[in-house]
Length: 258
Image (tube, rainbow, N blue to C red):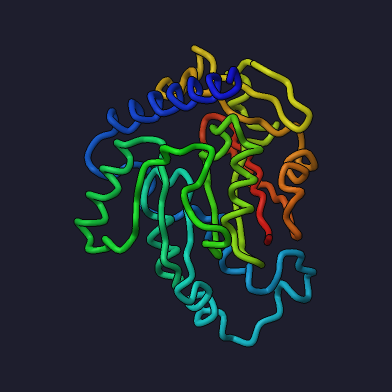
């Protein structure tokens, strides 16, 4: 009972922060108007396998463009925490039938408005009201992903269990997490220690003032992140880093197959 109460309080807290975030965003469009580049790379290479040696990675027969377009073949795909709809549009272009979930009603309203404006209303958007549960049948999706978002679910183990349940046999997943090298962690406080991760909260001096107070799951290492997805048959973690912005950015991407 106490755990359920805590979960409900955290869900309300998170939804309030992200509703405010999107409500203060200018115009209909929110976030990037282009897809997440690591997701593009994962989907472009996933047909060759997860663990690629150099010879396999670079081997091709000149038919890569056709293969990338056919990767979905009408299968269902789910984005958790879509924020903007650019990833979903790219996934649809690759042949999937995509659905997006968001904790913010405002993000859903803005996303639907953008899709209507560009004539892509086949993409389904809805609020994630049943967290951590996913209201979909077993083995429903061939692709489930969530970038710059899923770590805000503090019941992450339950969420990963639901992802496993809803992913079809040999289905693909991809998620991002802050790495321990990210400068954002200078502006956070540890709220709770767990075996594989700690729970952090963005502090009141975080440069991005609209996300102050948000709590998130922070894996302790690449190995710990991989262990969080131990149920899956193939798991790999890679790192994306840049010093382009004023704060050093370092993200871990975990991806693989059921």
